[in-house]
Image 1: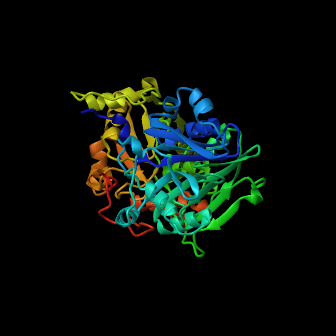
Image 2: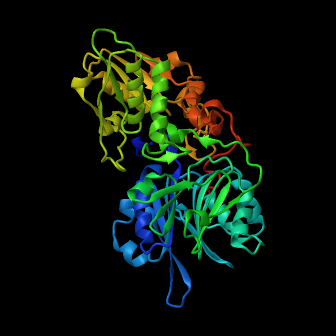
Image 3: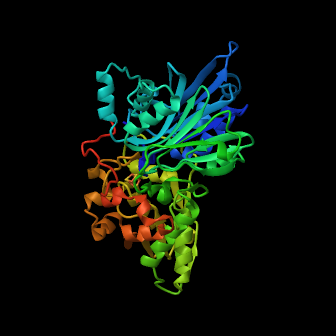
Length: 495
Ligand code: SF4
């Protein structure tokens, strides 16, 4: 048995990318996926479309396990194999479907009566099991155990003639979270579920249009941001799309519900240089840090400055916000780099044995002892999932002999599973659930001098500019925006 120590943070979500009408479509998709690597590091794939010598559109796919740079290590894959003017790509962590099956690596492609179709999906369908059972009863044969394949079958089995109508009909049947990119023989289509759980944006690069989970993918390509795909919207880009106004737009239904964006994107998941849900992630993450300082400050215990450090890299921006607000409160403080993170651990596995859990943290982090010794230290982190890594990290910091350690978390305690794509462990394994959110007991377990989380109200107050009511916070509050099956398991489709 190997112990994979990199899995402590909430995992999952995926990254999707698509580009239409560019002579170097697969290269741009490669760079797009590279910028979205943080959204999924387990596997990736690209499908490109090109016209063969007989004038027929052909879909070519290359996919594999590993990082984008590993799967596409050989540059000739892009130049010689993945030819064509349009492409879509996908980075994944497993959600539904076995993470171990190569078949589950997206994009998925089919050839049906209307031609070729490729799909890449970010999110989690909550009614996929019922739909899949229904489709199987009607004779459908599934190639994968992924919920995303259900969408392909629904499109392919539609009796409607127009492809957009087929997609619209299929999408109206699926429930849960989805940001989709679909490539057909003559169109790039993107769609977002009616709650807008996951981000999805449209960009423009010279004469080509792009779609990506996060805008950081546009920046890498020097593409311009056009707009976000709206919750419940289906957009289509084809040869007739010259300007932004030419993008065809349809809605899943007329009366859309209140948006419910995944607030975890602001807390942890999206890159701070992205723009999602109408705001810069950097700004929102700083605000979460400021709210944390305002509501849960740490005061000087002596004449020395309070030392604020982040758990890199995901909490860097939050720690900046925390420090700024602490200063505003008149508390003498300084932001320091007290933890150094190794960026080269990749898929390192630690053999079991004495101290293997500790080596897991040590291989990833080390302390800058001179910064921490004898000081009042505030450690800012974005979330605690199981608690084991946080405990080891505190132990590591304690070895640097700080005067005291104060842990501040920029989200509320996670006590519920996510049915929309975030891969939390079972409820029983969630740290805060185990301790019934008893902060004092959790503090003792972690071995810190003080522990504070943002409350749900404080968190929503921090992002209120984007509309407090526009967020899903079910993993903290248990208020799920959709009906969910309490027996739902991510491995539900395992064959
Ligand atoms: S339950 Fe939590 S992680 Fe899942 S979509 Fe809602 S806010 Fe995001």
